[in-house]
Image (tube, rainbow, N blue to C red):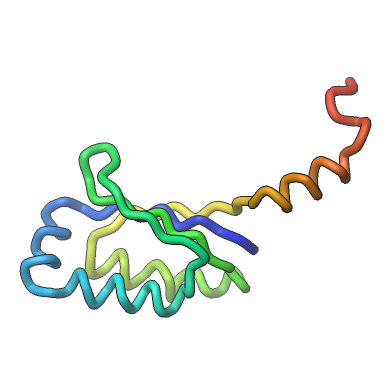
Length: 102
């Protein structure tokens, strides 16, 4: 299932990880594991944030994805399913004329 991982990195832990080189290793390992279709990085709400879109093949992957980010970066993580344009068109076609009825 196409999933977005929103990763917010604690400022203090992130600064330490940058200074000691851990940030590069942790992010490289995460991106190699996830093989994302897209990954974007920006400050949000005053903290380092990443938006990584990847295929979550099985929910049992969640601990192995999230634990390194929790423990090494003191990160806050959100995972949520997302659609691309084709997925949206397919979903809308499935509801057909029933949209808005009610």
